[in-house]
Amino acid sequence: MGSLRSVVLAGGGTGGHIYPLLAFADALRRHFPDIRITTLGSPKGMENQLIPAAGYDLRSIPAFQLPRSLNLDLLRTPDRMYKSAHAAGEVIDEVEAEVVVGFGGYVSVPAYLAAWRRELPIVIHEVNVPPGVANRMGMKFTKRVAVGFPHQLEQAEALRNARLVGVPLRTGITHMDRPALRPQALYHFGLRPDLPVLFVSGGSSGARTINLAVAAAAKRLAHAGIQVLHVQGGRNDPFEVPKDLPVPYVVVPYLSDMQLGYAAADLMLCRGGAITVAETTALGMPAIYVPYPFSNQEQRRNALPVVESGGGMLVDNSELTPEWIETNIIPLARDRQRLAAMGGAAARYGRRDGDEQLLRFVLEAVS
Ligand SMILES: CC(=O)N[C@H]1[C@@H](OP(=O)(O)OP(=O)(O)OC[C@H]2O[C@@H](n3ccc(=O)[nH]c3=O)[C@H](O)[C@@H]2O)O[C@H](CO)[C@@H](O)[C@@H]1O
Image (cartoon, rainbow, N blue to C red; front, side, top):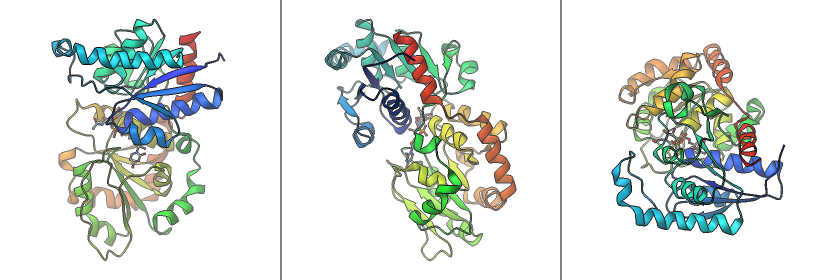
């Protein structure tokens, strides 16, 4: 394996772009303890909480809002684009970066531009179909594109020649011994060991439809003996859960230790964000996916191969009602055999070494 002294990692916005960046940073640190790792983020994204909390150097680049599609609007923002790229370039020069690795989000664009001007290697990691706007721009400057999932290679022309590496995931998740951590996780959340746990999470920002539907089904779930661990999500309004339920229904605003949630869970109800899908499958977690309906069907594409291989169920956002939950989730959560079969199928689809595979790809780029 080669070696690296200084890298710049760019990515921001929501958890889906930041957690893979952090997991990759951890892999770099494991292999090269003296490496200088500098991250570029935007002033308002979740990176401002998550990256410093993980102990990495975060530099803020002036906000640069891309249009939702690549069109002429881009040419109308040259000043801001120039300013952002200039700021990214200053950081790249200061730390003498050998490579820029981008994970998507608007802040990646100035990083790609600045690296390209300096003729530095650029590596892009993309997890969605269609690829995000920022990474699509980046692909004009580099052919070194890595993807998280096999379906991306088939479903996006722009990703046809990409390298399949998987998704860098936090080792707290990939190296977790779920049964061993379970008692501690249940105790942590105040959940009972004798009843199944439904773990509800709408991704890093939360999901209003999921939150309201599950809260409205709280009584039915509780009377069926199903406990709920419900992550409200970073950007969502609180919701009401009836008091005096016969079994625990625990609401938490956000989980920094997501592995505790996974360890407590028997079944997950979640959106189909790419990193969530990478995590549930890496863990062999049976899951019901409710794809976010407003972004190009990308979350449906993430979840569909898992569901087709038997690792979960898929339900449309508009169909997730308390009645649907009663009819479908209650029997499933009580059926240990079916859950085990689903979990096994999910695990066969999942990958755990995305961080190592991406590192290999990046080392090839700098050699
Ligand atoms: C609405 C939208 O556009 N969503 C996109 C966004 O989702 P989002 O940002 O929600 O990202 P994902 O669902 O892919 O990942 C969420 C991440 O947040 C973590 N987490 C979540 C809740 C919590 O309390 N604690 C915690 O740590 C999860 O463990 C996971 O690592 O980025 C993904 C990756 O580009 C895309 O595939 C999604 O389509």
